[in-house]
Image (cartoon, rainbow, N blue to C red):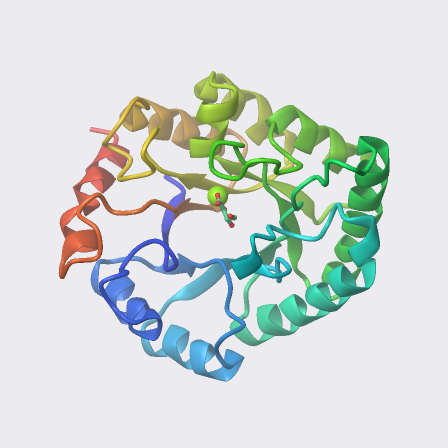
Length: 271
Ligand SMILES: O=C(O)C(=O)[C@@H](O)CO
Ligand SMILES: [Mg+2]
């Protein structure tokens, strides 16, 4: 079974951010991911990883002004310099945290800009980022995201993401396959795992229950079935990546809420 990584942005919100590393390790996680490390010194985070025997498996490149509603810069023609500076910063953190992949968010499509111009900027930015990342041994990931959570997000579908990755043809440019977004946008999730994982273009998975983005055992997706499919296909194609647990615990941020909700991990048992 692919390994589960705790998403420290969404899980363990009952603890201050830097204390979430210890909490995840205490629950048996060996890997962690989060959205953004930039409010903290890389050395401080590297120390937490080492103290708790954790691997950093993923984080995001700078997304622009998140608090002002920005959700990535990669498709924005007027922001190329800022995009490039953000990739350089992300790669510095990736090296300090020994993290083998970064997620580059596409951004919101401005209504006044032609889709073709956004697409051209997106593809040239991704090609550039992949070259920079390659020299650091890092994969660049793109993630289709549903427009209920992020209205106007530029990249929404698995097929679009795979077309882009194929067209650019950089071996370290891959798709971040978030099963939660896939179910909301297009469904047929099990068949999409079967279709896309063997291509070699999937760099990472994430999961959450649908529709509320709570624990995977809450909601309309049958994760016992899906995790068995993932396991079967990953074994067939020797895929050894991680599955990020990117959900908001239903019990909220009260003491013990994240740990109390982890019973769903038994769904991954093949019994
Ligand atoms: O929202 C998600 O899904 C993510 O993976 C984040 O990195 C981006 O919002
Ligand atoms: Mg995700």
